[in-house]
Length: 176
Image 1 (cartoon, rainbow, N blue to C red):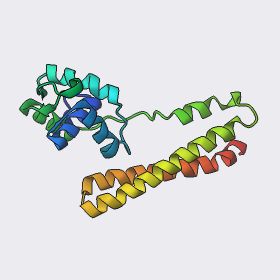
Image 2: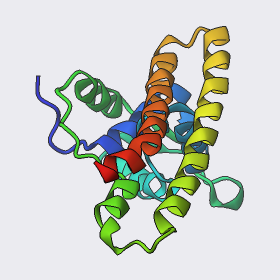
Image 3: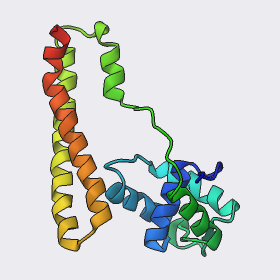
C-alpha cells in the first residue's frame, strides 16, 4: 500500500489526534500531543496551529465557530478520516535521527576542559526526569487499559534508558 503523497507525518499526527478527540482546538491538540505521542514523535504547538488551516483548506478537517480568545474547534471530515486511514496502513518512511546532543558531540573537539561534563550532566538530568514521567504515565495507562498508548510509552521508556546508558558510557567511548 502507498501512503498518500500529500499527507506528511505532521499532518497525519494532527489528524490522528483529532480522530481520537473527535473535536478539539489547536491548544487542546497540542496538549494531547504532549501526553499521547511525545515519547516517540515531536510536534510543536506552532506546527499544529499552522497545520490545521492547511488541513481545513484541503477539506480534511472542518472548523467550528470561533470561541473565546479566538479558539476554533476542529473536527475530522470523512475525507480526513479516509486520508488518515490510508496513511495509517501505509509503509512508513525511514527516519533520519535528529538528536541535538549528538550534533553537539559531533563537534566535541571544540569543547573546553569541563564543558562536555556540564553538557552531559544537564542532559542526564533531563532524561532522568523524562524517564520518571514516562514510568508514572505507564502506571496510569496500565490501569486504564490503554494498550496502544502503553506500547508507545514503553518505547519512550526504553529510549530514555538507552540514552542514559549511552551518556554513562560516553567518557569511556571517547578514550578508547
